[in-house]
Image (cartoon, rainbow, N blue to C red):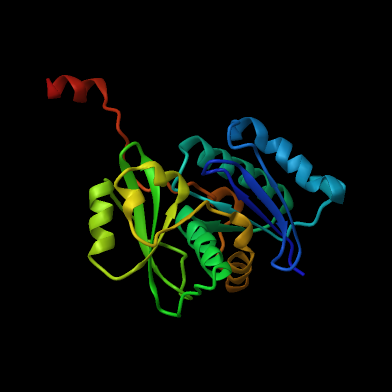
Length: 235
């Protein structure tokens, strides 16, 4: 069967998975440690039983582009570019929102709350302090290119209450006093090891990029700092 390497460093801990939907190996970093320091050690650990990365078969690499940690997303893209270039294999792009979606669907299924086809699902993740990204998926539909909305907790709650949707949110957001009051929210961490079926489907459909075009998804085109000229003009 197809052998895929999945990688996620955009969120709280680095996770790597190797294999397919039927058989896989998974390694994770300690969430209290730095992904940038541990990632290559995780790569070595993942491929140790198969004789090392150099001799292992990798048919494709899937990675979480983000949104999430700026450093983590850049790190993942760099490592993916290097491995995919050497292995001459294509890259499948994943995103944080769909990984949260997959984790939520899995958790709901284990609780015998399987979503019916076509159910509208709002999925949210933190962007930075006081700010969040969210999007809507329909169960059993594509999650490939979500349209991201960004706003504060009040705007997110308004979006949830304005429509009848299932809600899946990153568990780290539960500390927010407003968000924790949302009824029936499913609180999960993204799990890239649940994405083998999606990665395989995209690989088979040719929805891939080459090594040098594997890039992070930041969610926003601008950031908070201003140039000196902009700071002076604002005075």
